[in-house]
Amino acid sequence: GENVEQHPSTLSVQEGDSAVIKCTYSDSASNYFPWYKQELGKRPQLIIDIRSNVGEKKDQRIAVTLNKTAKHFSLHITETQPEDSAVYFCAASRGVTSYDKVIFGPGTSLSVIP
Amino acid sequence: IAGITQAPTSQILAAGRRMTLRCTQDMRHNAMYWYRQDLGLGLRLIHYSNTAGTTGKGEVPDGYSVSRANTDDFPLTLASAVPSQTSVYFCASSDIAGRPNYGYTFGSGTRLTVV
Image (tube, rainbow over all chains, first blue to last red; front, side, top):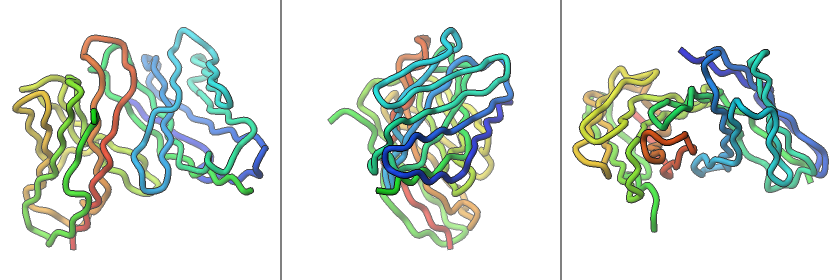
């Protein structure tokens, strides 16, 4: 089955700097890669996702890149703010339909220092 | 308010006791899921249901059972709780089966401690 690895497990950045979180996956059939943000004590929430037919996707200060050949994808947060502090989970799925289950990475705890 | 409701919010349970975690959604999503969240391990899938009347096993199904009698409800039962089942449990649902995956909506979680 699918296995998703995520690095680093913890990340501290100064406010205004960029943060990058990297993930790898094992199932070459995976083609849907969502990212979730979980603030302390709250539920995970989808912040951005990418499908295998695109290499990069941006939404304001966040962007995701995908390299299907190398089976890795990354989350980039620019101009970080204290409210970006949270645990971020990458995930992978064959993603053809909602029948295709999502497998999560172990998470990255991001701290943005004011 | 549309979304997923989980109950209880938290529970302390004696080992060996039976416990059912409740999950109800009002979005008419066909697919529902139960995950457990443990530090350093992320979110691991316990059981899932693609449509009412069907269920399947996820990554860590042992010690848990589910049922899906209707679209809205997806309870998770621990038949005889053990301390290793201490975790935060999240229920989730996703959009209409058969459509491209648009991500999950999560409930607020149940913090379960087995002593």
